Image (cartoon, rainbow, N blue to C red; front, top):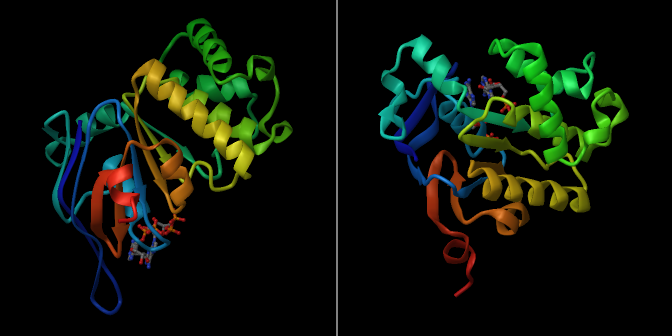
Length: 232
Ligand code: ADP
Ligand code: ADP
């Protein structure tokens, strides 16, 4: 379970300060597909950086399974961060490496023996439906295929949480649906908690069970997708 409690981020600016997140309270249960929706400037990126512990909140706490991340040492934090994997709008694949090598990369960093990493990477390629792309380079792939490789890479560290930051924003509607189905499948089959950060209502409606609406750094509403989006 991920709990954001009174999460506040205030940046210093030339004019004084800017409150990017204002006492955000969100609880994300294990196994959920949780959407966080908001327009540009709502605070989504800042929230992502607080959840994956790249940014320290000014105030409030990030609790993962009851443990307060804001209290951890840098070393413990680095370790904890490995349980949260990310995918991005621009895929962020390494262009000089093959797909297989991209997927092996996080395992290399973690010190997994090469043969074992390669075996796991092949399984992950199978899981994302691209077993024949092991030796291809990212430039040879479509956007949807690149995102599948990025998903495989994200899963290589056996995360508990998959954080999707505008992961389908660069894709056409058909490809978006196929990527969302893959994410849904991964959530069900592997029991990984998914957090979907997006400015697109359709994405949330397609796969999320719960949603929080973020506006000017504040949570306007939280609940099941039916509760929040139903028109009375
Ligand atoms: P979103 O991802 O929803 O577009 P962001 O989290 O990127 O929103 O930004 C929210 C607001 O916080 C924006 O108005 C942005 O300009 C401001 N902001 C983000 N980072 C900083 C920073 N380091 N210093 C000052 N203001 C920032
Ligand atoms: P994204 O495209 O993911 O929303 P942004 O372009 O909002 O990212 O932010 C990229 C980087 O610039 C972040 O590190 C953020 O903290 C910083 N940043 C965003 N807005 C501001 C701002 N108004 N002043 C200073 N830094 C900012």
